[in-house]
Image: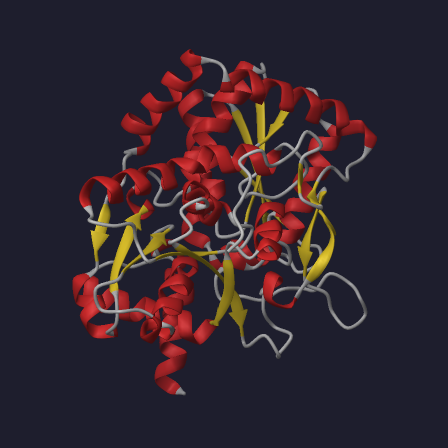
Length: 403
C-alpha cells in the first residue's frame, strides 16, 4: 500500500500533479502574502497557544469517541464508533478551520471576511467567528441551498452576517464559490476569503488541512490511549473533503488502518445525477486548482446532485485526488436513498441526528459490514449534526411514506 509524504504539498502547492494555482494575476500577490503569513504562524508559539485556547473554550474541543453500541448491534459486523464533531460549537467540524483562519486574518490586518457555503455549516461557522471577533462578514450561498438549508441561513443572519444569494448555474456550492472568488479578486486588499473546504488555489488546501488536523490528532491520541490497537478503518464523507483530510492525515502512515472516503452517489453514478467526483471524474481545473472533476457528455463541468448540500460539488480537494491515485485512501460512494436510510437508523438506535453528509459515511459501513470482523472497530467521522437538514429530511420522509 502506498504511503503519503509529509512534505506535500511542495513549494508550488502541488500534491503530485494536483493543486497549484490557476488564478488571475490580480490575486497572485494576495496568495503570496497569505502563504507567507501562514508559514509565519506555524513558527509562532503565541498563535498556537491562542488557537488552542479558543478551540478549548469557544469550540468545545476535544470531541469524544463514542461507541454506537445499539447501531452496531442493529447493523451487525464491526463495532461502529463516532468521532463526535457534531458536538462542536455550531454543530460541525467547520468551526475548527474558521477559528484558525479568522485569527490569521487578524494577524494580516484584514477587516472584511467573505466565505462560500453549501450546507450552511461553513457559512454559520464563519458568521460565528466574525461576530466573536467583530469583523464584517458576507456569505455567498446558492439560491437552491438557501431554500433547502433555511435553518442555517436564519442563524447566519441572526449573527449579523449578510447572505448573498447566487442565482447562476446550478445555484449551489460551485456557483457560490465562483461568486466569492469574484468578490475576492475585486476587494483583495481589504478582504480575507475564508475557504471552507480543502479546495482552491495554494495555500488554501494546506491551510484547511492543517486547521482540520485537530480531528485526526485527537483520534490518534484517543485510540492509542484507550484501545488495545488502532481502528481497522476510518470512514468519512467527501465533498470538497475537509473533514475527511482532517481525520485521515495523521493516520496516513498507519498503513494497517484503512481510510475510506465516501462521496455522494445521488440517484446512482450511472444516472448522471450524482457528485461522485473521484469515482467518475477525471483531472481538470476548477476554482484555482487542478483536481478530479465530473463532466457531462459535452465535456462541461457537470451540475452535480446530492441530497446533502455539503456534498453537492463537482470537484474535490487536490490532496484527495493525489491520495486516490496513490492508493492510500479508498474512495467509494452511496446513493441518496442509502444515506437517508442510515440517517433514520442512527436516529432511532442512537438518539443522534447526523448530518446528511455524515449519513453517507454511516451508510458505507452498513453496506460493507461483512468486510470486517465483529472485534474490529470502525471510526466514522460524524462531521456534523442534522438539524440543518430537517426540511430535506421531512420531505424525504413524507415522500418515502407515500411511495
